[in-house]
Image 1 (cartoon, helix red, strand yellow):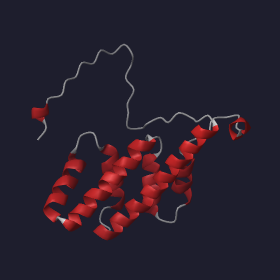
Image 2 (image 1 turned 180 degrees about the horizontal axis):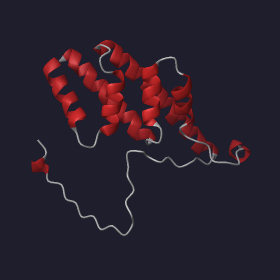
Image 3 (image 1 turned 60 degrees about the vertical axis):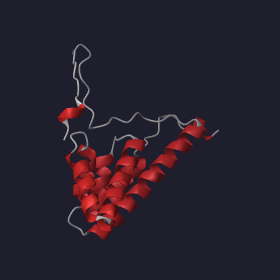
Image 4 (image 1 turned 45 degrees about the vertical axis):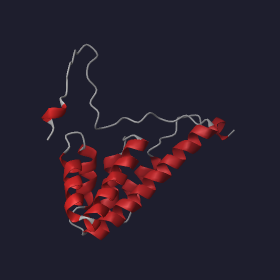
Length: 150
């Protein structure tokens, strides 16, 4: 089994690190840097959601713009906002192409992760930069109301 060849855990972000250092487009480098540490599924589906919203702005401009503005104005979508602003101002078709190219990189990242799992290769734990860890002794009771979101 190939997993026995690796003595140290493999970094699942290796593909993103290469992209961040060596890609010819500065937008792709920026998106790769923003994605370091983000969960594999979270990153992929966040980019896919942006692609679909951008496509919808071409097919149905009013509906697409509403959906895109909802994504970008959500308090919990810092990552998506960052990705969007990496490609913003390039024209819709170029933005979509860049996001699709980045989604292919994220898909390759996911396929590599699946290979690592199948081969029994240990992986380094990702540290999500958008998740702040709170002290264990902090009692934080927060409730959210559906009525507060417009």
